[in-house]
Length: 207
Image (cartoon, rainbow, N blue to C red):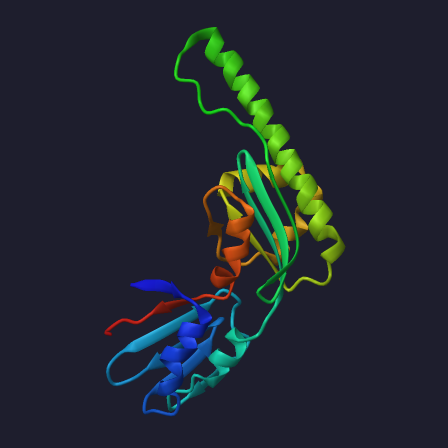
């Protein structure tokens, strides 16, 4: 069973294992450590560049890479809210956060429900266009400087926003594989994102 662990805690846990008997394999952006007691697989949010095999537990290359700070763009979108930012390491250096009214679903039927649905669809379109506008305003000047982009919030909202703003498709080219599902995007949620950005997925079968 895997779980996401903050990079500081990963270092505390794995550093004592360095040089102990076992085997290490760095491949396909992840690291696998086999010891007499267990197998640990570490998959950082930023795939590992290091590729090698060692006939000993060698955690140094993993710890060195997860300690690196990156310049990362973040786009968190749900219907009715968005948070866009740029992180230098764990520091938020630029951001835009906003909300737009999008009514909930209409439970009744008939023509009134159809009118409500059309109004809700238009509210959602306007909200997603606004999110796309702010994403472009914050991140377009950073194009070429970003190491990666974190997409999050709601997958469908992100998909629809990119359909409405096709000029932002370049964000997908830089997107991390992990989608950061978050509650209503707010500044506090954006401020907490670096913990997840630098977290490592740890699978420690046999622990």
